[in-house]
Structure formats: C-alpha cells, structure tokens
Image (cartoon, rainbow, N blue to C red):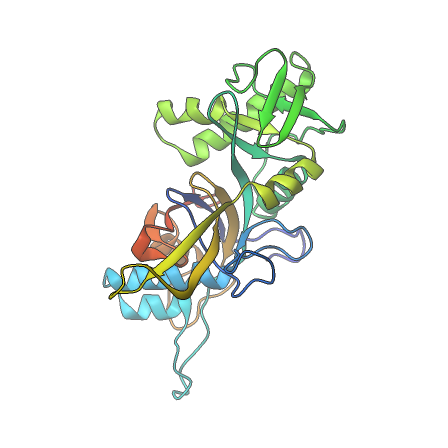
Length: 304
C-alpha cells in the first residue's frame, strides 16, 4: 500500500459467486446447527476467510501444473527447513458478503444487500484506486426497501422476503436511480451475458441494515444430514446432524494485493496477472462430494 494516499498500488478485487450452496465451516456449533458457517465477529455476517481462499487458489494452480517457482512466489512454501523458504507475496483479505439471495414471494428470489454492506465495499474499491463508483443510498425507515425501477419483486407497492414484508420507498425518487446504478455495476462485474444482467437487475434490493442482519441469520440453508448403517439400512445411531450453507447465488468480495515479490523477478502486477486475471471455476469449502462449494472466482480492479 502506498502510505501517502492509502491506495494499494498492485491489487485486485476478487469476487466469489456461489453456483451451488457453499459451506465454509467454523467447526462445531453451540446451537441446534452442528456445523455452522464462518461469520464475521462484529456483524454476524457470513465470510470466507482469506486463508481458505488462498488454499483453494494454491490447489487450483498446482492441479494445473503452474510453474512451481511462480506458485511459490505467490503463495509461499510450506516447508521451514530450507533457509531460502519465504512467505507468499500475496496478501488476501477475507471475502465479505455483498449479495445474499433470499426467497421472495414475487420474482422467486432476490439479491439482497444493505447500505452498510455497500459502504464497506466502496471503501475497499476506493483503497484499490477505483473511482466514479455509485453512491450508497440510505434506507432509514424500518420496513422500507429500495428496488430497481423494473423490479419483479414488487406487487402493490409491497415486497415479501422470508417472514418480512417491506414497503417500496421512493419508487420514483433519486434513490431508485442509484439502485439502478448499483444493479448495472454489479451485473457488469459478475456476468458477461446480457440475460444474466437482467436477472440481477430485476432482483436487486436494498434493505435496512437491521433487516439484513436478520436475513443473514435466518436466510441461510440448514440441512439435516444422516449416515446410514450399512447392515440395517437405517440411520446409524447418533449419526444425525445439521449443517449450514450459504445459498447458491451468494456473492462475496475481497482484496488481493502484492507489495513486493519474493523469490521471483516478476513485478507485483505481473505476478497478480499470472493468478488473478482470468476467471476461476473451483470448489471451495467442505462437502465437495455432495456438490457443495462450486464457485466462480472473478477478478477486477486496477489490472483491468
């Protein structure tokens, strides 16, 4: 980071789009959910730790036989027995929730976010030197919601998510235009095809921060899992548990930056381009054998 202006000189914004339910676990839970997902301590919102992201990208590179010296320069070396070993050149932040898919009475589901979510996202993008970002509208009134002008989530001026109902605030006001700007920005960032642009644009919704807190707690998937006794073909004794997942279509974002490169003559931007330029389709988190954690990792920012 450049200490004079607070901007990361060599950095990328990375986005994670869950194509199937995503379980990055925190170990044993203390409530009825035996295997909860990772959450941020201060907000209770879902996150994916940077260490998990780093491990997945490392495995992805190794599986594709990327040059070992480049992999070592980017991610470091595991052994500490060699005096030439070094840490990785990449610094990867936790991926924080940006869009939470929530069941909707109209339009099937919504991509839900909140002012505080977008403010922190804007702060991260500004730290990368990105400019001309959409403004963040406020949703101050409890029970109010902001949607795009052509939203499929509204009927009779009301929107219904899970156990919550909202009234559409300022459907023709300046905030509606700002929501449209965010819908355009996010759809261009996440999707190439115009059909997918429309899917997101017509389903984006901003709710008050407190409502987003509730949805992050109550809007995740909780599935019962069992282990079958091979002889009796019934549930094995004590082998019933509940595990939590972020639903498919969840979107999270973080930053990867590189101040200097260890063990290579490449510049920080050149090393970032080797690993953080083209989209990555990979498996992240646990429960891979039951189809969980298939994600797209996308990169944007100063390297575009």
